Image 1: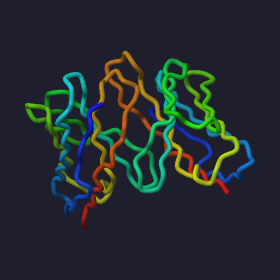
Image 2 (image 1 turned 135 degrees about the horizontal axis):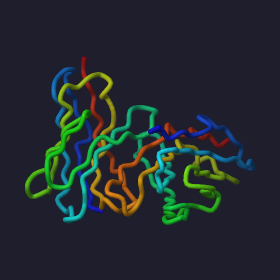
Image 3 (image 1 turned 120 degrees about the vertical axis):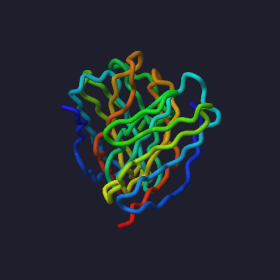
Image 4 (image 1 turned 90 degrees about the vertical axis):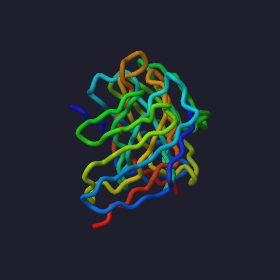
Length: 115
Length: 110
């Protein structure tokens, strides 16, 4: 299985809602990533988990809270978002630091709209 | 990671080879050149990577100059499905972090 899956595909939420984005991979990868992508812009790295520990946080506001319950799953918990947080949220995975290759495999993304 | 520079957009006729250039003049000795592409409304897709030698896989070929300051991604027989934004990234192979630049928007023309 060489696929990264993300749910839901689309999400509409109000500014007071709490929601979660989910990502799953079964490739045995030990690094997982969250990216944010605005329209017509490149993906921007948000968080990196390496061996289930948060290794990189790109100064992301605390209204975004990542969680890695195990090596196959990655969640992004959302609370009190702003309309400007509307974007495509991409999850990716790779073999991780120390391995010979580090190409990242991306999921299809969750398109988030904050009203 | 070293900064990369790519043309904003390129056109290529269907069936012809698409040659996408990338400049990475400040690349360090332990940084690899990675190429990804993103088809509209999909997640990015890994294409190929290399360090010094030219590389080829089922999707593309990567030609790296001897001084490693630039590279070219070659799609040998472009199809309409190759229309996408192509990103060239210089990154240490053991580094978890990659930074996407603006990429090249490739249009394959029928």
